[in-house]
Image (cartoon, rainbow, N blue to C red):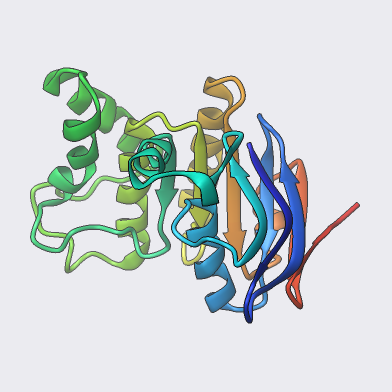
Length: 218
């Protein structure tokens, strides 16, 4: 699903290599927030290496046109740490927005699916309000629901457990794990700086980014 071969990016990667296979539940730990943010851009094709090769879905992102990159990103779901919600759209509008552009599912079916997902993760706030007053973790839960509606093949979770209560964290882990298993070959990547992530969720592989290289834990 994602293969990095001796990729270099000035000041960040130094002939770094990594392989995350289809169907994998994987954690990638970084030392800084800057590294975490830049990895998110690399894994979504928004940052191109100076040298080496990065393949996503078996395609070299350096060789893709803008249209091809756009199509590739429609298969990728991201749950940003801050939720990634648009401030002047209501919460339910934020959740439904990508679906209205990229899916033929009916509005009624989409709303039923949205409510089912929100119930699973324990989100019970008013969906008709603007997201501004919501705490960050609730914005993140709304972002999780938005991503799940799109049924992506590759999902990147950006420090998603930060600040969650133990009860909500448990529901979120159960929902994420179940969602991962619903589609054969789906890949879930957890970006984080906190090793405590590994206490929250069981993963198939763990990589650490240190001094420009990925180190896989045995």
